[in-house]
Amino acid sequence: EDAERGASADLAVVEARRRMLDEWLAWRSSVEAEVEEERLGRGLPANPVEGLISQPDSEEEQQIIE
Amino acid sequence: MLFNPDGDLLFSVSKDQQICVWYSHNGERLGTYKGHQGAIWTVDVDPTSTMIASGSADNTMRLWEIKTGRLLKTWDFPTAVKRVEFSPDGRQLLGVTEKRMGHLGTIVVLPIVLDVEAEQSDERDLTIVCDESKATVAGWSYLSKYIIAGHEDGSVSQYDAKVTDLQWSQDRTYFITSSKDKTARLLAARDLELLKTYPADTPLNSACITPKKDYVILGGGQAAMDVTTTAARQGKFEARFYHKIFEDEIGRVRGHFGPLNTVAADPIGKSYASGGEDGYVRVHHFDKGYFDFMYEVERERQNRL
Image 1 (tube, each protein chain N blue to C red):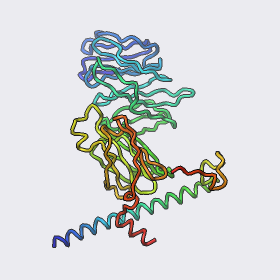
Image 2 (image 1 turned 180 degrees about the vertical axis):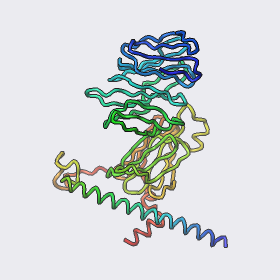
Image 3 (image 1 turned 90 degrees about the vertical axis):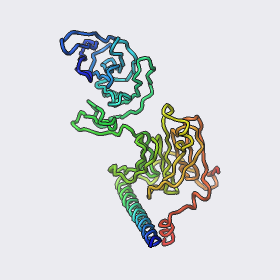
Image 4 (image 1 turned 30 degrees about the horizontal axis):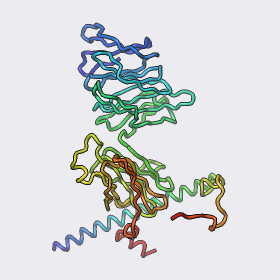
């Protein structure tokens, strides 16, 4: 019976986490959609610094320091 | 004008550049505090009736010893100081500075040592810039918790006086704050909705959000003056990792010998850095376990996709 109670408590925790994850992802997608809509509405580039600095043309020119 | 907490003294300020203190029971003048070079707008007395603070059109805020009239400290500002107020615990002093061409109105908070022989700090605890409508008045709430400000346009605003850090998510749609009240909070940028709360067991100085993994990192510890030798052993000086979504503490990283003043997340997600009161900056690289760790429900969702 104790084990059963423990298992149902665990289940409740997992359920709560599942709900938190769902809520978080739903919130993220609503915010992302809202920001995207506003960005397009204002005619802004996806990268806010676009055009401000020259980007290397090819991947070879980009140096990645690990 | 202002009474001290016992009601036996009355302080008055005016445009004649001196502060007067009077015995309230008979109207006799006890003395004056001289030094300001302009009209004095405001005066406040600390909760122990040891010191008074004043703000003036000469762009200074000054601290005086009540008993002797001695000037203890002068803080300079770019504009006039229209209001000063000690916090209820006497450990902080706020000043409201005037808006003038090229300068926005601000509310500054300075740490105060309630000892007339102590050196007072120039370093501010907090600066609030009022870019919409300048603050005309401001004061402290119960427990020195909030600063309430009244603005020129008639609005009243509330500031959390204990927030020590604010760092953004990568897309700047939400941010994390750390607070002396031992909690970090995740808030939405669009409406300041409180999204998550991360409780800790020590005052927090800094918090950041990690990219790649849904974690937040908090750093803090008691101020040096309050530290006991057991604090280090109790692990108060560790960086704490919490799950951003589930609000659980998932791990701690030791290393510093004093409070953590700042934490920073590498934008690539491979490391983080912490700066401590002990003078060290430590950069930590995450290992495989950090990237592999997943909650059951996260794995479940990943498998579904």
